[in-house]
Image 1 (cartoon, rainbow, N blue to C red):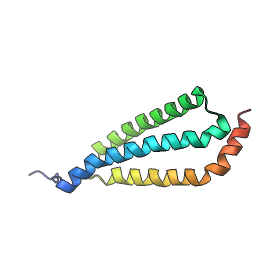
Image 2: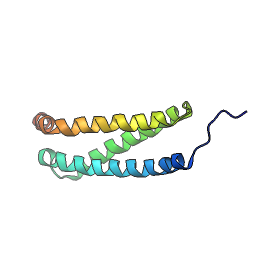
Image 3: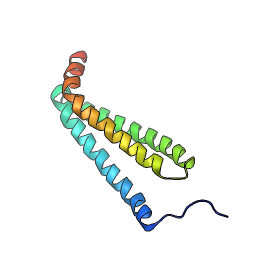
Image 4: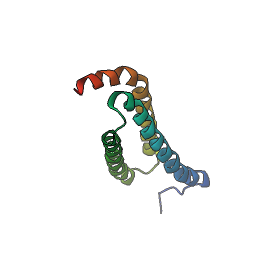
Length: 109
């Protein structure tokens, strides 16, 4: 007897929409981060390259951990929990960036 539940139409739709929405949000956050960093670190190719590198490394790590987690889970709850926790983390970062970036910029010299 197969104990794995079959996916409903709504679940399949969510599985297709989730990477589309999260991918768009990641790209938006990358552009927002550049706009936030620019007054403190400039608009150079090195700032762009550094930010793109960090985003790509974070995506690779997230794909690795997400794949490992997906192989060990019977539901999609861990996926949506990870998305929720990352949204909370990004909210905290956006709320504290105005006090954090000036301090970080003073350390670069």
